[in-house]
Length: 151
Picture 1 (cartoon, rainbow, N blue to C red):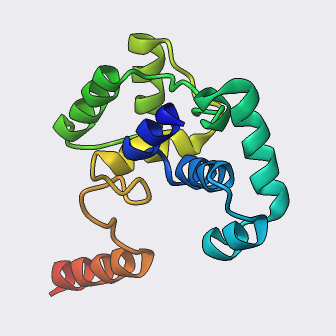
Picture 2: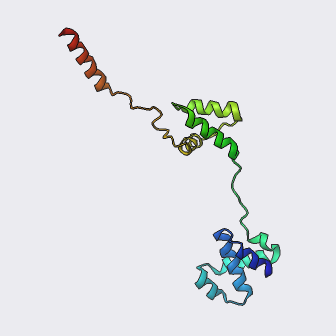
Picture 3: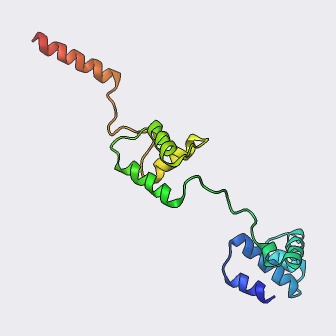
């Protein structure tokens, strides 16, 4: 019970905390109905985590999945973001090439590249500094230019 109290005091992930509190309350003699009312959990939740705690200890309460390992380390990611910020123009193809050549990274999804643009403060949808002229603006310029040449 001492290790359980230390775990709760360490301010774990909210999901782990709920599990630990449910187990602690159960071990202290609270009924399932009382625990369910206080924590908003099911009886099965209480039983599951109590059994896991009794068989595996604190490890049984902790989250098992910690997420996937990123392709870029934090320093590498920072370097890529700095590289993007230093450039005047951005191109998805250039970013792909830079990552492949310098870090050996090729993402399966374009979203991963877009996320890097976003972290660098770049909107990937508008990779040019200024909006290119519309076709109607080009025609208007041509007409104005032709009229000036005639006059």
